[in-house]
Length: 270
Ligand SMILES: [Zn+2]
Ligand SMILES: [Zn+2]
Image (cartoon, rainbow, N blue to C red; front, top):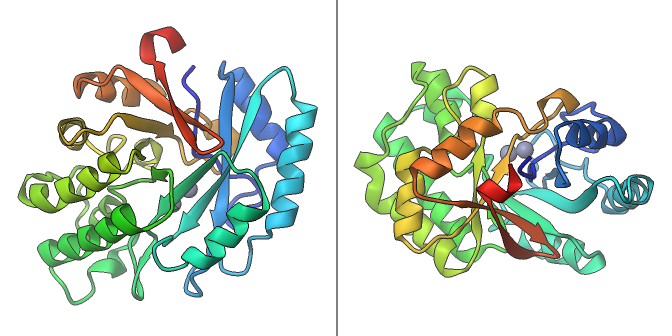
């Protein structure tokens, strides 16, 4: 089973999952390694603001690592909101402990939440998506991160706004390619996030079309993330995501160890 590199526990403000239950779920799914990536939000608008306690998180991760040693390898991660805006705090967190992976996420653009219909307040679809991609380019080009998490998250806003379960990125190919090129050039990864599927918002994303563009721009590193907030969602719908990778011509998934990417061939891991 391909490693899940986007999982939350009760150390995230929006999850009740016991870390040990998450480890058990990953083992039950046949994973040999996975990453715990709890929210670290420095944006005062976010529900997670003020919630992240780096020392408590680190102690919990190390306890889990010791307890499950020999059965599964736990990679220490973070999902960091708006890393292009809150870089100093991120550097301080990363200098204190040896993290394996940093997911860079956009959850807010100014005072607009990118996951709800409110995102499109006073602007049309096209304006909204261009606004989103311009911000994503800033993250891709400037921020410290390993994986650009849910790079098509604006789909959630589109879903709530218009009910669409898919988004054709063709009209936005140039700005999306700019993002993907920056990720590729910097040797970083994008994530295929499967949470849309179980939330009834359409297939995992980004789409095969976007994954192909990533490959054409020189991108080689793609992680899989369930974005699980409950143990039962660990590794959810990875078969669909792997089918999408293959359709895009990718034969490997990526894991991060001490913030370095390693490719795992899809066949070998199954
Ligand atoms: Zn997120
Ligand atoms: Zn997440």
